[in-house]
Length: 135
Image 1: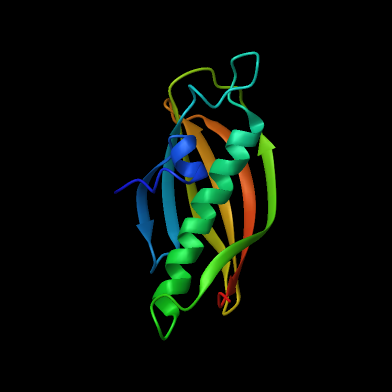
Image 2: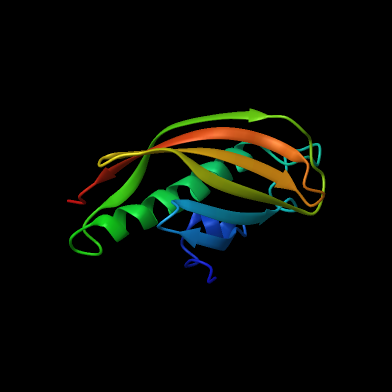
């Protein structure tokens, strides 16, 4: 899938959309560890949090647009993020997958799991998005 414009956090952190599925309300996004580390060379917790919110928001936004009477009427905006960091990563890529815990008319909640190249669990999170009509 294509990357987003250069004027986004996704581009600056070199995130890449792997899959998005509106009907299953899921998404997978990858991100390199290089360039997204803290001073000791490990993946920055804030980078993991940004990745978690990104993948859940993409899935929720795809769902919001697919269920709107007009394709671009509703958008998803993050309202809550909780993340637990479980394993340190120094190199390679991390992959975040968002799967729905709750899908409603105005709110979507995703569980996010972040894995490293060896498919080891790096972090887990929970992201809530509100579905709104933009002003």
